[in-house]
Amino acid sequence: MSVPIGHDRAMMLRALREQVATASRRLAAEGLVLGTAGNVSARQGDLIAITPTGARLADLRAELITVIDPGGEVVEGTFAPTSELDLHLGVYRRYRAGAVVHTHAPMATALSLVLDELPCVHYQLMELGGTVPVAPYRTFGTTELAEAVLAALDGRTAALMANHGGITHGPDLDAALSRTLLLEWGCELYWRAATLGVPRTLDRAQRADYERQVAAKAYGTVRRLP
Figure: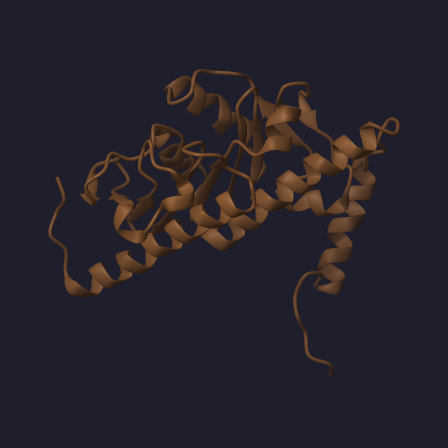
């Protein structure tokens, strides 16, 4: 049952629900979700806006997004939250995330069928933690799946889910969405390389060198000339 909230909080939640709906539509437009497959959430303070179960992500609007508290109780909205609610809540609790994106993206899902991990074949994958582990298969919507995926995310911002799809998290929805796009790009990059031969991967020393260079050059930030 929805709980009445103040005007200012209602405006904040409207914006948060709009972010989740917009991100969902973008995932569909990018071909990373099909029909009702996949789910998105974003947190603001002690409230979480999350996609409803059974909804087509391409058609989502702000008023269709459900708002829950950290215990999963509905605060606002008329639809039950995604069946992967335990997974989203677990990521928020364990990793202090600001947003979570789960998709059945074609290349990420394909590689989850054959790999135990996605190797770090490009330095951009360092944003995801380097190598991307594949969580063992568990039935969707179960606590067992949530536990397996949470373990795979340790030290990572992305994981593949065996015979299922992929998941990313970030400090906000823009970051989580960007990482989902990066994960799919990395999966496709690996697949294309593997059709030509054995892909080279970056070893620990090379990855450490990359991290030092990022710090030294403030890589990835826009800076004015002195």
